[in-house]
Amino acid sequence: MTLTHLTNFELFLLLSVLKVAVVLVILLLAVAYTVLLERKLLARMQNRWGPSRVGPFGLLQPLVDGAKSFLKEDMNPLAAERPLFILAPIIALGCALISVAVVPFGAVTRVHGVDLFQIANVNIGLLVILGITSIGVYGITLSGWSSNNKYSLLGSLRSTAQVISYELALGLSLVGVVLRAQSLNLRTIVNSQSAHGALSWNIFGGFQIVAFFIYLMAAFAETNRAPFDLPEAENELVAGYHTEYSSMKFAMFFMAEYANMITVSCVATLLFFGGASSPFGHIFNDFFNTPVLNAVFPVCWFVAKVFAFLALYIWVRGTLPRFRYDQLMSFGWKFLLPLAMANIIVTSFVIAMRG
Amino acid sequence: MQLALFIIFGALALGGALNLLLQRHPIHSALSLVVVMMSLAVLYWSLGAEFLAAAQVIVYSGAIMVLFVFVIMLLNAGTEQRTRGSRAAYAVGIPGAAAIFCLLSFVFLSERGALKSSNIGGDLSSATDNIAEVSAMLFTKQLLPFEVTSILILVAILGAVVLARKEQ
Image (cartoon, rainbow over all chains, first blue to last red; front, side):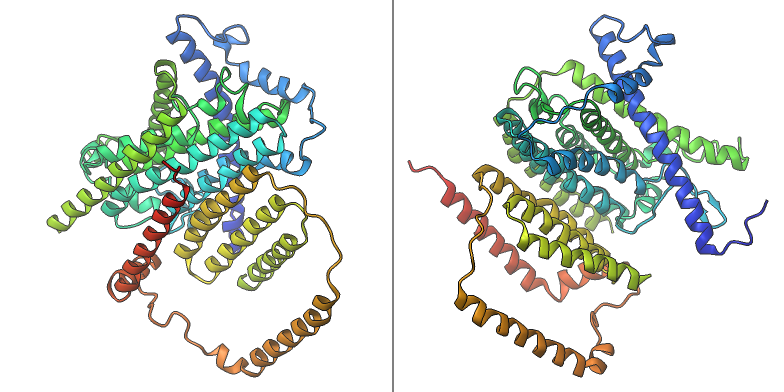
């Protein structure tokens, strides 16, 4: 069955819808199994097993958890502001899932003119991700306020202030990468790091190691993960901004947090670790030169790098103590932001001297 | 395609703006304004100004409106009380608004030909990337307004810090 009777636009539409469906399913499965990964890794760090009863090595645990979330009673507090109460987790989860639309997770592989491994190749891909992160703040803000609960409001306001403060350091730390790639297009940024394998990745050959650390710390704060997870610490503010949420809505917040983690890890691999390119560069290009393997191997490299970042997230959660709120804010404003600006100045100076 | 996008998102922007006026609680009005800002961003993108669309989302919807929402939440402003408008406002307002609407439509319709052939963005050639073009213009020909605007924003930030400082 050839698809020659469809016009170009219809072909593009069909393949795009297919890509969106596949990527969405894979991303949601990844979110569910990231929860399991975290529980297992944290458990091993604390010298216990983690979920190991349900299925072999606890692998069916996410399915059981999902079923439990569906079947739990969906409580709606009487005094909660209904429309916003329901809208907040939708915004949080929606924005967490949308960012993956501009991420190229493999090498350029064209089928009937449509690139298989990127859903939307926009010229401002990086700004799209930053913009969606900015909109995701509303999910947190509205959830705390609409719960009509003092602890939720405090938790959500703290979390909102934290997220918008670290957004600045996050955005500025990426400018060095953009200066090297001369474009905001994520494909162009990945291609600018593909010259010599691992040596030309932005963290090594691009000398963006300071920017990488700023990005990493800002990303930990953006996703409200340890050690910046004061707004959702159980022993601080009951449960922060998702105190009043139960079953499916709580599950949506939970999924949104892990989906944000995955998005941030994807962006870190794209911008600092060469995306889908292999660390060996072009050395082994002639060995497995079939079209199928040429398409599959870059995706495997990308997944491996994202997995490494997720493991790093979980490792840091299991190791570092929490920041106090004022320490957190002063760290973001008084240390990371000036350091990011200094990084921009030094990077542009070096590029101007070289070129 | 562009017409469809314009109709949908123009209607959304208008609906959001009307909702902003008609809602009783300030937080619903602020969220309607966010909808308006994002519809405007889509309209900018459909006209080819992709960087401006992204800046609109990041700066306006993602930072400024978050601050608005923050303030409304902290001040705990309640629902607005419905009062009857003053008769004088209705007597002057409705004919005034109708007059302005008629004047604007007359001007736009009579200048249809000139609007169609206008050269918006004439300085920008579409030869290179949108962002490269805008930044080249901003840092060479428009450098003085750029620097003066940044000093203006710095003065505003300093003023805010001074005003919000505790008395010592």
